[in-house]
Figure (spheres, rainbow, N blue to C red):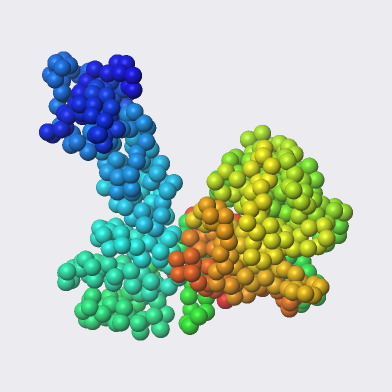
Length: 595
């Protein structure tokens, strides 16, 4: 096109001819040459292909005259730009307009690009726009992805300006979903009231339909007392009283259940005290958090249900990785001796509750990290036999069931943490061969030397690190005592920005979690289990950090006070989630509810 080869056409949109006359001062990208190519446009868009090839007047028009398209100038510029660049340039509204134009004129390549942006670039600010667009145009897969994202990040989404522009039917759909991720049902009422203040216009029918989507039956007594203040100026007190009374009818008559996400937190193995506290006992159990309940005051309940057991007995100080919805369990220890370190690897399919023995690692590992990246699983460092820590790295190919050695870490480590982000592995902290806790952060790209990045603000080992929103969060673990020998609990909590290469301290962890576990569920960072090095007491607490509110909350407790455990996020079979109404957990032999 730049050389004029095959350029045989000018197009007209409204009163504007595109490309123009070739003026160098024109802002349009196609003004440098006065013609475009029929072939290029036909390949990029079904609309142009039909325009140029069907037995219509346009197919045989005079090449010297501009061809009328019926498009607006903005639409024509967009389609021409994509035909020659394969890109869309502009702010978020431009992407939405491009997607709408691609559907209208059957530019499938452009639509594919826009849908990729929609599904992989969701943020609290854009999620509602994507959901409304996908529902309006019947894009089922995009709609499910956007809806799952909005439900999981609902407290953050509610705070955005886009929430007030949400259509009523979509708001009701979200409020009625079992997957709405809120800590208290009062949050759903606050969201509904905020939307009604902006959109209700005094319509009692709309107010009733929206507020009836709130599950008043799940509110505590203290929350029920707050209803008048939350809904002031939104609903008539008589209507509110009627809705609350209706919701508090016998539970068996209501389509009301506790809200729970499709993905669940899974606890894998670990180590715990026996009931008489006389000895420690490794665990072979897998538990999943079926639902989170709120009781009077600040008391929180988690209903735990059994998922399965390791096929070869208990293990702790192991590592887990998830590829798709498949769990991989690697290494660890079965007992407390030096030579009890495991090299075995198992694969678990939660949907059919099946285990499969895989190829073992090249050496036994404990206190190590395992991370899934692009169809492979990397096992990094750790303790191995007589070695307190090692620098070796090996990679498991999921497709071929084989292990191979990779480039080593720049230092031997154990008790470190690792996760994947943007095609690279990040390794933080850990202990070296001199038993010193580290502040280092490494970026490890397979096939390239490891890179030292900005160090953390404090030493850490036995900690957790998780990726959320394109940033790395580290929490828990222990560090050296200031000016003394020995260790202390590390309560500092910080986040790393890969773009800026800086660490920022956030609200400190409210309780020690040394050798605990962590996962991101519903947009929250959950830190669970472990122990306090200063008191040597195990903890069964679950602390959740909410990035939107920048606060820690207590979500509840584990089924037992586990240390050296691993946790992950999986989707489990619907049959394990129980009936679709409120139930008494004590009636289920597989249910365990802790407070």
